[in-house]
Image (tube, one colour):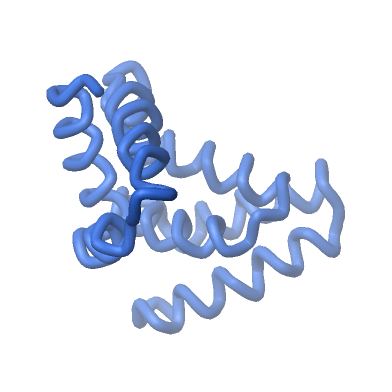
Length: 126
């Protein structure tokens, strides 16, 4: 493991997903899934998210579109919260969901709207 890349990734992961959420996942890691948690933090967050070519807001918007297209709704909810932390507005989230409807279908966009509403209400934005 590249300790420096892991630490950069851990910082980026906490900044986007929230320190409590990330720490909970790391604390729950055991010998079975700890290597994955470490690799994901190092590679996805350290290598991917700390590349300054794409700013965190844009990266969050891309993630919402891709995760929504894949229909991974648990992850979509987590990244919807992260997108708000990274400066994505309620209106931008709505526009992203419109694109998901066009390219992935109305049923998928309805799921995204359902979860976005939940997140936005919990964050006091609706």
